[in-house]
Length: 115
Image 1: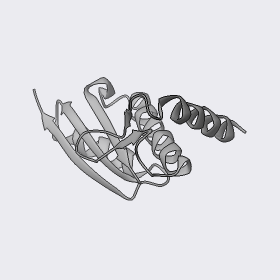
Image 2: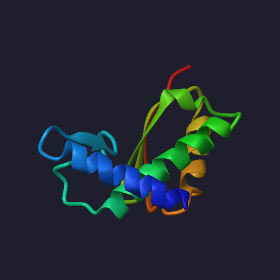
Image 3: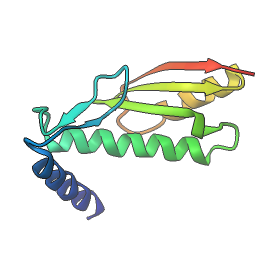
Image 4: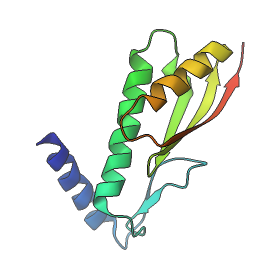
């Protein structure tokens, strides 16, 4: 039910943005979608938005990681993590959590270690 509501909201956003402007969904380094211009289906776009939200939620809930310094870009199941962490263990944990999310095909870490 909630998934259908999200799809309907995204659909109406696409209709509103079509011809006026575009909205980038995804992230730097992974391509992203220009809503209103991209020919990607609403289902694919919705899946990526949902996946990004699931990843961010998992990172935020984890006590070992400062998730607010990590940006998540998702494009058709390919995820790129940008930002910084304090240790290599935190970077590995962020990648591990991201890989655990349903639908993630590949994770590219561009996380910097800043002490």
